Image (tube, rainbow, N blue to C red; front, side):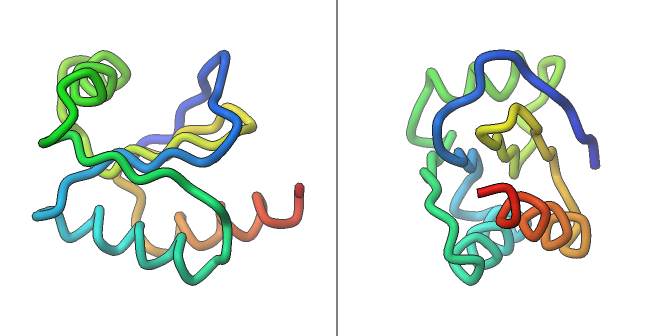
Length: 93
């Protein structure tokens, strides 16, 4: 798992993943349960999104890749890291 920081983040959480990836499904579950608003993008269906994920992750289609409005990016987070980050993010709003 990698934690990154980007410039010019989106105004809402964006979750890039695939329907067949367990980690992507788990991230969607965590976001759904958190009550935070987010956008889901399946990189198998969106070529531009897939290219963005590959660029961000040095050529790899690493999913889930989750971008937050504060510029933080979680790449393939484990459950505990994701939940902890969501909690920190929820307290910022």
